Amino acid sequence: MFDREQRMAAFVELRKTVRKDIKNNDIPGVLTELESFTEKFGFEDIRNDLAIIVGQYNETTENDLIKGIVNTSDARIANNECRNSILNGILPKIKKACEEADKSIFSKSDKISLNSAYLCNRQKQNNNFQIRDKSQKIHVFFIHGARGHGHECLIQRFYNHVNKRNTARPVLIDLSRTVKCTFRSELLKKIFLEFNGGNDSRQSLIEQTLGKIYSNSLLKRSTSQNNSVFIKIDLPSSAFSDLPIEDIQWFCKDFCNVETLPDDAPTFYFFFSIAYRRVRKKNTDKKMGRWEKWKKNREESRLGKHKNHIVERVKQLPISLIEELTWVKVGDVEDWVSTYSGKGPYEQDQLMEQEFQKLCHSERHYYMEDLIKPFKKIINARLNS
Image (cartoon, rainbow, N blue to C red; front, side, top):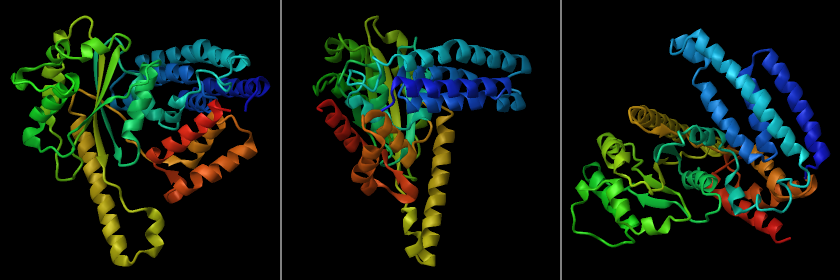
């Protein structure tokens, strides 16, 4: 893969580009260059630091200036802070990582593991997650995207980052078939059963809070080596099903009242998740008649309106919106293979043809869920070689 000389040569070019863009006051260009570089070379810790800087900078963009959300002085201060963070923080860290040939992430080490299978694409979503307030004990997020785009895979990636030495999986709660009038009671029941090992209770669930359930649960005895808990809650995705706004507001404000949590409670991460139905593949357009194309276009239009409605409703809630999950591009898979396979260029091309060509969908795109299995196969082959 990349030896020390290659990494240092790439870093020198990066530094020139960054300094030039900073001189031209092109901060977004600098951030894009740094994101691309750290992703290509697999500097995951630096990418996480960069995500925080990106999130802070995005709070004072030019669009915010135009809208009058921030003033020119605040924007200038944000730009200066971003420059200093890049020049005095990110660039020196990248240089050090490039220089450490003997500790390269491309060697067979604990930095290459099955968790690496979840590190393809999804940088924007990772940025959304990284800018959270890490001092809080309860976080609530909203994830959305078409079926197959890897909602659970993304949560697993977040989980792996927070719980670096833990191999457990997030808790999954399926409410996708629940009607709105029973949503709250079903949510409480399933959380209670998950935390209590499947043991039911006759006590009134409607009076329960997260703190009460945790204090009397099996979970309290199993988190001694794991200081965070991840819970995915699947919501109904039909265009005929509206978001249970009132119930989610109650969940965030009353059920997740941090004051009810004991001091020894772990950090909780809740992910409300919607998986939209898939639209017919684009590569079948040529075979469609006029009537079929009209039906497909109408379906896409309805789905687009449904997505926009969902996003607008979520913005009314006190939860963090994760950017929509979409296709994984061929270039993203090639970058992952280049970073984690440990193979040379010719062998990388062979892997792309043998493992991924058959999985490719319309316009040379992939579903994330289709990629995890071959990714793990490649990692296992490297670790066992």
